[in-house]
Length: 437
Image 1: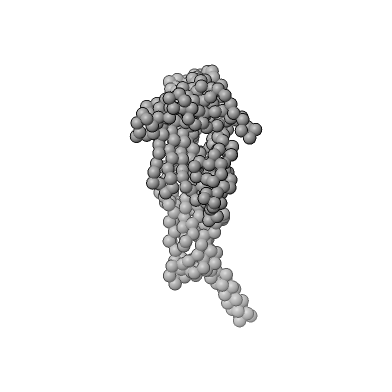
Image 2: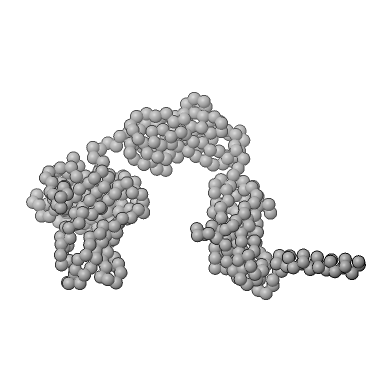
């Protein structure tokens, strides 16, 4: 009976030791090798986040993140995340071959509210995870609650159809009785709203700046109710119509005209363009005629058309390079697209000196709602577009030239820059005078 008990005990401890061997094997053979487990978006997979993360609270060992690594060579490791918002994660130790759970402990203290994204690296791999930082809610009262917000100061212009920016704000008064997190926002009225979040670090009377987002829909005066801290007040905003009769990015009204000049050039470098009162039909499509004039006499013409916020140009002719003329209706601007949006104008197959070539123009929105001063004239609501002129002789696409055009709403093309690739020459044209009807 005693031998049997001993044998069972030996078998039991042997089994326990074998099952725990992976955890107790602290492999001291050198630096380990392996990879972090992650998904296709480089998110650590799986990941476990533990603890509360509050603003201005020192983190402890209760704040940790578990990630998993597939270890191919056992040994030591040293993992340190990047530091974000005043805190980071790290761990040193040893792992064995196979899948290991590595616990990274936090250090430091969060400085501000929000969602923080961290990156950790192991071997040649990296993955990311996110932490949400919170705070105890502040106790505060909006000035003027529950009536009109006292001392509210509005900043920026509010024009119908114009997207609001960070310059559109309202400053409101608050009285803080207990520090902590705050969130103040309005309802959406006439297509836009105001909001702000943050931390009150002191008590007493102070101000908060709320930033607007959205686009005013119609002209008029509108009342915005703001809520926060369990109370509310309201303030008025006046929306106006843009003082211009033409809102096109490429105006096409009869007799509209403008002059442009080469940057660094002289008066003799000036080009005068006027929109003709006559139309022209090409390939069954009606175009507006943009006449290029010298001393009042037309010397060249460009054919343009628009369909809502879409603007087209007829690419017609051989451009002095190709053996055969092109005849393509190309979209040169879609005013509804966001920054970085792209599209392609396919001009098609042609020949140069008998050699076949496929030609296209890649287009990209570089910026929206930009402002600029050109030849002493100030413009807003500018859309910047880049055009890359590409040829393919059968050996892949090659960019031969690039062009950047700036279209100002209600005024048209105000700046144009063209250069070859690689750059040896650059030509810049700026619009010096505009008259739009």
